[in-house]
Image (cartoon, rainbow, N blue to C red; front, side, top):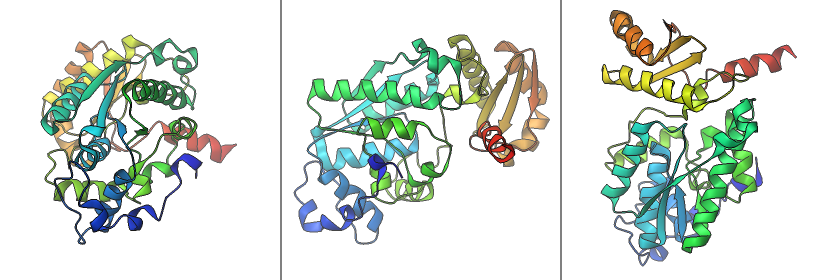
Length: 302
């Protein structure tokens, strides 16, 4: 495991209830009923202040909520405005931060100007995250925040995620990893805290829809965003539009495949309106990182 994401097993036990009582902004007290939430709060109680890289997803939303409860005005949310961030995600992130009452800065990122990112090799995520954490560290230093945090959870460590290396190099902390929380734990704790995002479908940057080796461009990212937004407007919750040149390969949740087939003409129209010539429905349904399946097959066949 990368050094920057090493589990700090003592963190969850070293800061007990007594130490947490005086934490500024800690609206919800530590509960013995949930040791993981106790540990997560303790992680933030050990920080002087924190900037949270906030994408709008459930993982970083929980990190932000607990950081704000523990640190109060010593917590800042930052969202990088990348061409690969869906417009709806940007708006939802801003709305959630406002509802929490957390100061929130939106900063332009420029990974699209990096030829290494545009080339879209299997380590594309490294260059994207390097830009993100460079910006985050710059903002943290300029605004007086000591620690930069992200929303990485334990399950993320087992997937093909080159961005973990960028986090390690940037000294970015992963509070969910330090608190030994997996995705299911995140959702369970978020539900217990009555967070409206607790069951929000997993999200990923739009560039993840483009096969490795196919260059990334703002036009392609916008095309994917338009198609996915239109399909979600039809009532589908879990949606990926995978880019294959003139062909859009649509993934929906396994429980939505029948509905997708029934509305196949509407799905096709949505993709064509976004600029695709053809639309196909993936019969395997949505699965996280389906483009990574190609990477794993290459390793097995090497």
